Length: 138
Image (cartoon, rainbow, N blue to C red; front, top):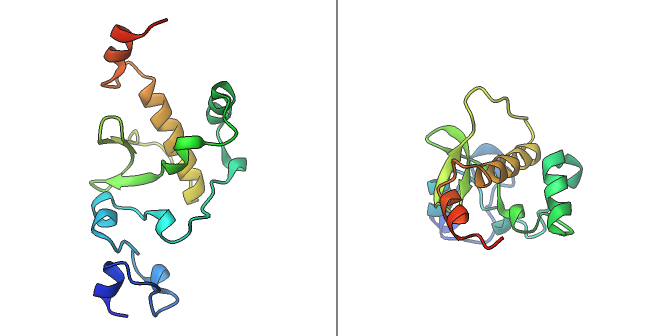
C-alpha cells in the first residue's frame, strides 16, 4: 500500500512494524494535533484504571460515574514541541507546567493530562470561570 493510501485511511499498512518505525501520524488531523487518534486503530482502547490519580478517583466518585466518561478522550499531546492537553471548552492547548516530570508510559501520561485538564477547568484561571461565577444557580 502506498503512503498516500495510508494517509487516505487505507486498511492496513503493508509493513507490520509501520507504527514502530514511523511517527504513525497519518491523517492531516493527527499531524495537526501531534498525536494519534487511537480509536482509528483500536476501538477497544481502554484506560488503565489502576493508574488513575487520587484526584480522578475522587472526581469520578463525586460525579457518580462508573468510568472516566468523557475524560477517556483526553490524552497527552504536544503543542509547539511542549507536552500539553487539549481543552475542548476553550478550543486550545493547555501546556504542562515547565519542569514537571512526566512518566514514560503513555497511559500514565494520559492520566496526568486528565488531572491537569480537570484542575485547569476548575481554576479561576480558566476563561469560562467568570461565566460560572456570573450564571451559577446555586
